[in-house]
Amino acid sequence: MKIENQAMMFALLSKYTILAKGEDGRTVIQEGMKRYGMERGARMAARARANGDPICLWTNQAYGEWKPDYPGQMEFGTVSAEPTLVTYISKCAWCEAWKKYDILEYGREYCVNVDAAVYEGFGHGFGCGAVCTPVTTAMSWGGDVCRFDWGLPLPAEEQEKIAAKKSELGTSAMRDFAYHTAHIYCTVADAIYKAFPEDSEEIISNAVRDYIDLFGQEDYDALLEFSPADFQTV
Image (tube, rainbow, N blue to C red; front, side, top):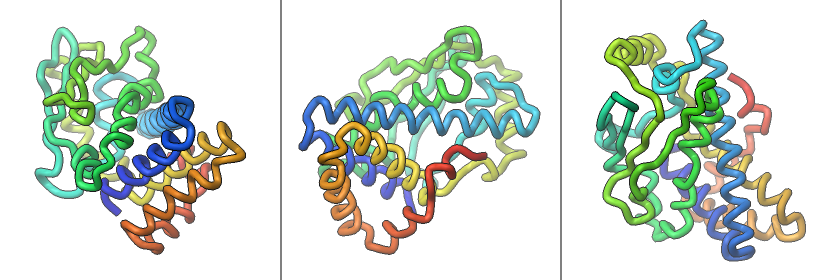
C-alpha cells in the first residue's frame, strides 16, 4: 500500500461522518485524529527509549515512522534551526491524493492537528512546554507551503545526531502503509462508533465501500488483519 491508501481511508471516513453529522462529525474526526497522532508519537518515543536514546527534539526528528513511496514524491526541509526549529513541506503526497480524487474538502481535516498530536505523544514538550505550531496556512487549506515551528532550537551538533541515528536505524523504526492505513481505519472508525453508535455502521460502511471501489477488496481485507493492540506496541 502507498500513502494514497492511508490518505483516502481517512478522507472517506471524514467525508461520510461530516455529511451525516455536520460540525459534530467534524469534531469527532478531529478527536480520532488526535488519538491517532498521540499513539504514533508514543510508539516513536518507546522505540527511542528501547534504544537508550533521550526523549528530545533531535530524537523526535530521527524516529519518524514513514518515508515517501518514491523519491520526489514529497518536498520538505528546514527553514531555520535557531532560535527554534522551523520546517516546511512544499509538496505533499496526502494533499495530491485528495486533489486527485476530488475529496480535498474532507481530507484536509487530517492536517488540522496530526503533527501537533504526534509531537505531544512523543514527549509533550519534553517538560518545557514546547509544541509543534503551524505558522502558515496548510496547503490543503489553501496555503502555498506548510511551515511548522517546533518550539525549541536544533543546534548543529544535534542535527549531526539526527543524521547518524537515521543512518543507524535505516527503516527499522518505520512501518509500511498497510499498517498506517489500518491504524487510521481502526482509530478513526472507533471514534465514530463511540460518538454515533446508532449511525456509525452506515457511515463506516459507506467509507469502506468507496475505499474498496478505489483499491479493491484485497487491500481492505489486509487492514482487518490488524487489531487495536498492534498500534500500542513497538
